[in-house]
Amino acid sequence: MKGQSAAEYVITYGWAILALTIVIAALLASGVLSPNYMISEECNLGSNMPCTFIVFNEEGKTKMNIAIQNGFPYKINISRLEVKLTETGQSFDFENMAPAVIESGASTTYKGTLNGGQLPQGSIKRFSASVEYYSCAPEISEGGGCSTSKHTISGKIVARIVSK
Image 1 (cartoon, one colour):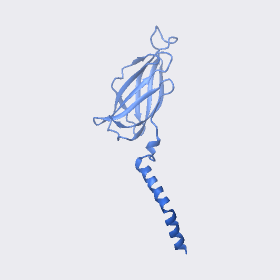
Image 2 (image 1 turned 45 degrees about the vertical axis):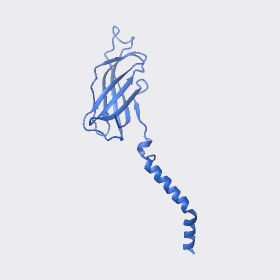
Image 3 (image 1 turned 135 degrees about the horizontal axis):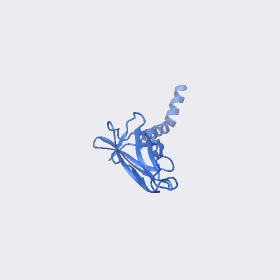
Image 4 (image 1 turned 135 degrees about the vertical axis):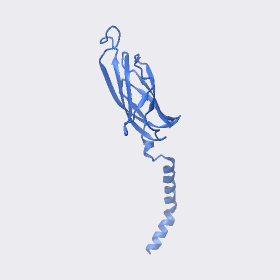
């Protein structure tokens, strides 16, 4: 009797089990259930320094273009930008890293190349970022220039490595 009940159950509900298996297989194959699909990219240097970026592989190297906007109500002078891969400590060399005075609301773009090997395309990587700048606020600057007191903003970048 038990064998007959089991056979009737499989015959009656077998199509539903087959359909469920097909749906799960399709979801797994499409990558929707991949953990990387759930992670969103972000560039967070605080509310006064919004940033946008792209990390890509080109000519056997991993490169980053990052645009930093001045959200302060006064000019700033960015003197240093450091972006490091959290898991290994590798850093980007930014080729145009001369000190740059940025007007309020304006932005500037930095282009860098990662020291070391190329990161795997399609992977999600976490970076720590640090920006050193001088305030050019009129109330603290001397003679219309920038202050001599350095400020640092730290943040994080989560990026998907793409090909260019």
